[in-house]
Image 1: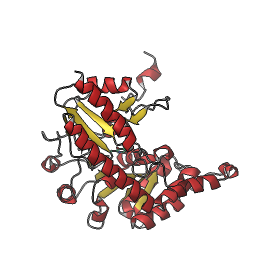
Image 2: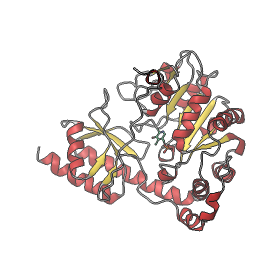
Image 3: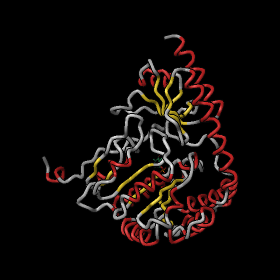
Image 4: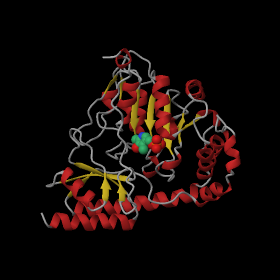
Length: 353
Ligand SMILES: *Cc1c(COP(=O)(O)O)cnc(C)c1O
């Protein structure tokens, strides 16, 4: 083996859902929003001048942070932004998880957490979800180097109320507790309201799901100003100009368009309710979803069989080849027409078995 080969940082990378080229495919596999971004986002895009691309963007993304501050009711010095919440979470792992004790997150959760822990050489433990796929708060009472909870959790979609989050915070006054709220707008109350009581809490959100901007890569963290400063210090030690100029401008436009997004979010929640009903009628068990997807398994048919059948018929859903969940499919909520196509296919398939 050559010397350099021994010195490679070896990691098993995160595998994102597929982005097929074929436009005919109904994509219910990566929890994208089926509705377009707010009209104001389009207006601002059309006003962007390519001449301005000569210049570096504002490293502090001040315009975006001001718009988030105004529309989320959080002080500017309590907001950090990044290139999607993946970038924000990665910076959080790098900045705050430097203990000899393991960071804790559930065995079934967003699979990127263990990848960041591995790449940054952070010790971690993954307490098991209970038999109903709920996080057990007691598992997070022991000494640890930090806690990461996705709420709603992914890929289960299960949302836990703020009493549950408070319980975890009360037992972890001395370490950083991260609550990843990628799907919170489809669920219930955000832990942002707890920031005033817990200076060790970081709430992470994204514009990729409820704001229909996955392609622009915009995410943010809310936390007390000391934590935000620590995050910025690390960010400016890696790459000052993380957010590009169009993302800053378009994210600002999105943050100013809450009325529009409340409507599209409501529509998705309605379609989710209807879809859970249809799936149950077809013999699926659906976990209670507080997100823009449904995690479901069929009583008689294997997850991979349904996945393959749908794929052949140009409907992509997500399947995870992991213990305990390999019979589940994660089905993103599309438009009503897209969901009707899914049900039509499933009905035919299950009737002919
Ligand atoms: C989608 C998702 C993210 C990352 O989203 P970005 O597009 O990087 O903002 C983070 N956490 C969870 C749980 C997600 O589902």
